[in-house]
Length: 90
Image (cartoon, rainbow, N blue to C red; front, side, top):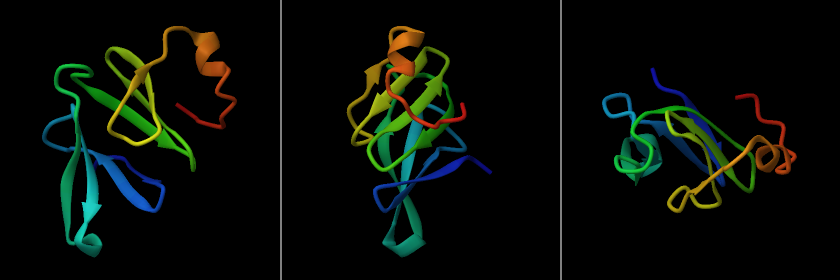
């Protein structure tokens, strides 16, 4: 089973059949829909974490953050990640 996180009232998970996709829960828990296709950017998402304002994602190309789950910004260095001052355990 893939990792599931809660973000802004919705549940998000890494697609179990395509690890470059993020899925979000729809229809009151009956189905999952594509939230983000990271095929060109991320290839293989390994872990995700979230608080109430951002999602932190770790993949084969490094760390990325997003405020929506749709637009992603690459974290360039460790200092930039530490400046987020979050409690993520990735």
